[in-house]
Length: 334
Image 1 (cartoon, rainbow, N blue to C red):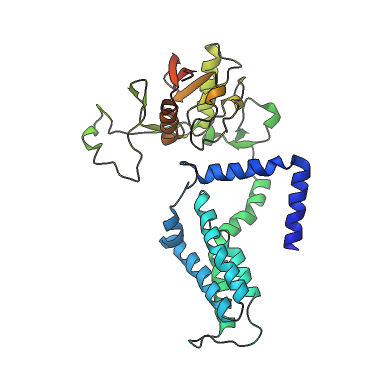
Image 2 (cartoon, one colour; image 1 turned 180 degrees about the horizontal axis):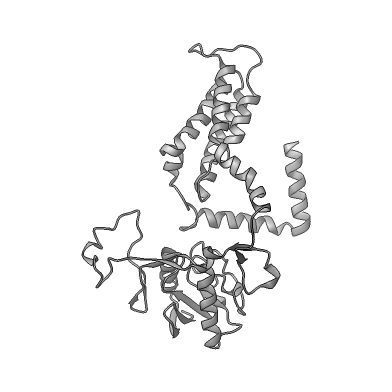
């Protein structure tokens, strides 16, 4: 039934979107896997396997494999053993690193317990041992599962009076709403150890492999070490209004930031090849009329990476306009 259901989904998607969809989907997966920014948006792979908050899940999965094979379920145990690295990798690639796979492990352990008493070499009754690992897996999965189950109910009964449209320039999407303070209360994080700042003497001592390096240099100017924590709509709407006053309506603007979706907040054109979420490289630069570099972006390391990638690709950025919020530049081909 699982195979037939999967084939039915494959057939339906292929019929609707064509066989080329699967090639594009595979390229997207490979792009994410090789991305310097998105391949690991949370804990490292080693932490996903062995950090204190994850190690119990890893041990439960491996013990389930061992108990299945000891109880005579060799094929099932081997199949689960092959799945464990996939479980870890999916958890590693998803922000928040919730081990959603624990539910499957728990159900497998409970469903495949031997019907009669079978003991392993240590004298442990394997029916009870699999019961223990199954219950442990489901217990560890309780938090994420309760969140998934209750989120539709929270959504259905959410009070919308204090909410505003997320995409303020698109009336057709006004039903996508968020709490106003999350998108309009602007908060920034500014490094206080830059040149001329009170703690400049400690700048190099504060660096480590876990912290971003020095900000990128744009046309000889070191960009501010600043990041926008809240107030994304306030930022986008302010920038959109500035660009309109400067006469850049209908322009294709590539934003050097984690999010490059300015066209959702004003009368601008989408940049062909530039995804709304940045994954690395210089996607969209060939089709962009302008490159907008935020002085306090939503993702400081993403901004710096884009600026460096554009420079390494040989593009020249000619400054045309500047405000207290951003620098607008015209890209020239290498």
